[in-house]
Image 1 (cartoon, rainbow, N blue to C red):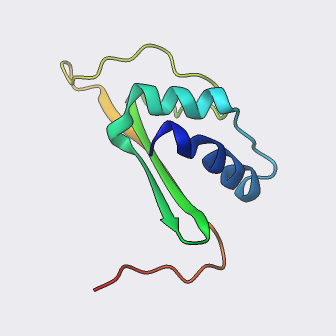
Image 2 (cartoon, rainbow, N blue to C red):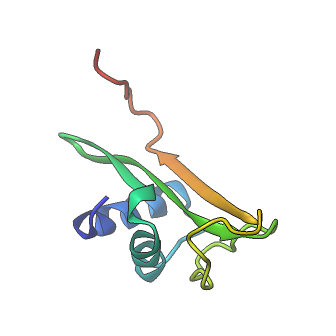
Length: 98
């Protein structure tokens, strides 16, 4: 995922999660905090899916449409985990090529 993918990512998220929209600022922060954990599934028809993972501490999942609090990027005390969100466009015949 690159900054150029953010508008399409937000549009796809709004299509998939009509009742749970997330702001452009939230997607931008996730990409800034953990660019190595942000990926898109693109096709000639556009963006078909995305995956966002980022560092997280604690056992309560981050609330939707909220910015992440500061979180260390290294595991030092055993409380560090990675939070993952994967979304795919429904009804698309997507598969990997051999």
